[in-house]
Length: 301
Image (cartoon, rainbow, N blue to C red; front, side, top):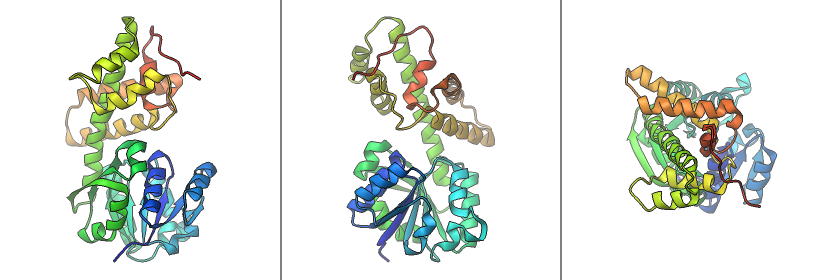
């Protein structure tokens, strides 16, 4: 069964990219967000319709993607408003692709609730950043029944360059993403520490950046995020507070597994310090601002 219409809820940097990719793929795409500017942007990109309330177009959807910030938002989007909730308005057997970074426990709870409404869930967190989302080249790490993958094939083809089928058990996708975020958070924190040390030593950060990105110490996160530091541009594509949340999920998962995470724990402390210092809504590279005694580049006009 081909998917012809898809709704995207959450039009941040990733959700907007996913929605635009669906439009480019020829899917009739509906978007929902509380941000009016995001709605206008998607409408101008060719959306079939946009609204602050996805219930306005729920009955038109063959599939739904949710890309909001956390599990509480996912639950509110789907099950808020009681008997008049979005889940109750969707057609039976509509596949719901939950792509927010959430815990395995929350993924299982959301799946159980969706099943009560006769809906299918793909536990499908994503990675790749705004750039990959805009190109329709995200990485999707997903778990769910094969029929749910099949129903979402057109959507997955539109938004992803690589789709990993982790297994049928809901929660596996969420766990893979959490482990991935352990690495991402540690890489950003380590990159910030290195660049802060360079600043303290009086080394021009553009030179340090160039050296690292042409040497063995480089990583994708260093190359991407430390460029923001060099440019003095902390416009949030992914904010410090997102990694406070995500590394908190890493910590919670590690506790459940009775598994030590010394590096991730340190990274969580660094991001929490940066948030506490007032940088929580800035780009996650702003974790470098929590280091005292250094002078950082400023944004050029």
